[in-house]
Image (cartoon, rainbow, N blue to C red; front, side, top):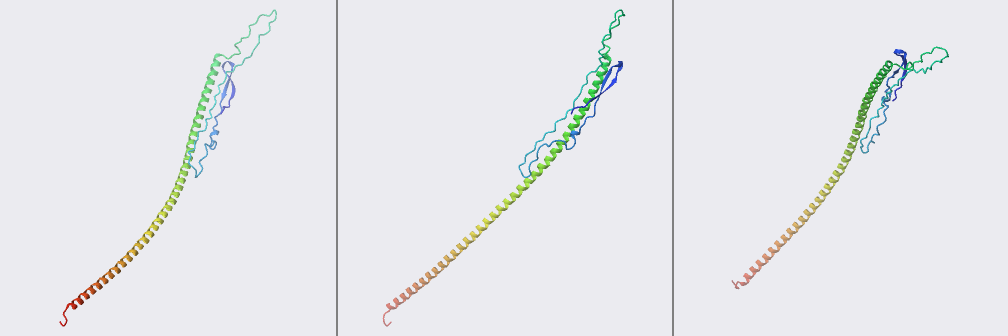
Length: 236
């Protein structure tokens, strides 16, 4: 940002002309709202989170203009000498130069103007720094909110995916448990039926064995009785 400068001539002591510097106010319109460039694109919603980087805008440093000493140099020539005329004094070569007092006055005025420019330039830089700092914090807050929103969305999506996987796994476990229960019921029923069949067979065989034993015992008893009868004497 270049400082536009204008000069106004004012007479100083001794009749010399001293140029005065008029400094215009510094414009800070470049740092108005909306004039900063974008610091970077924000991450796409639903995509992987990438922390965006941003840099502060560059300072628009003011420029200081030191003025040069100005003096009027008449460049007067010596008057023509006529023959027979009385000699005249040559013109003074220092008359056209500013006096030391005028130079000192100009120097002090220019130094004061430079100090004023420095003061205004420092104020401009301070204002730029403050505006850029506020802009950085605002930009960081906006990016932080967007990143937090994206993280929240990703967490919610992952939670939904986790819940779906949980429901699928739970359903698979429940189905497996139900199938195993049915298989256990079938096995238990089959084993019960086999036991009942075996038990019935054993009871039937036991009854048959009992009947056979009783039959054999009855036959043996009958045979013994018949043998006893045969051993008795006749007519007894």
